Image (cartoon, rainbow, N blue to C red; front, side):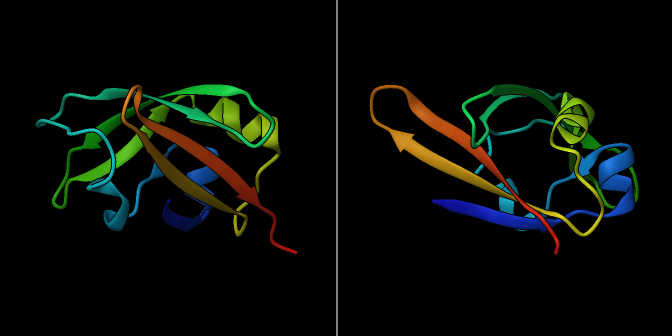
Length: 105
C-alpha cells in the first residue's frame, strides 16, 4: 500500500527528507524527540537504514536525518524527482517499508 508521494525539494536532496504529514500515521510510533530506525527496501533490493526523528521547531516535523543522503547520492536524486513510500503489513513479520524513485523528466 502506497503511503505517500513526496516531490523532493532542494533541502530534501541536500540535507534531510521531511516526511509529509499524511505519511506519519503509517510509520512506527514516535515519542517526543526520540527517533526510530526505519528499514526500507528499494526497487533493486537494497535495504536502507534510515534514522527518523521529530525535528523541533514551531511546527514539529518528522524527518529522515541519517542514511538519507547516502540514498540520495546512490540514486543520483535531484530536486523535483519524487519518492514513493510503501508499507506492506505481514501478519508474521510485521510492517515492511519500500521506497521507489520517480525521475522528473
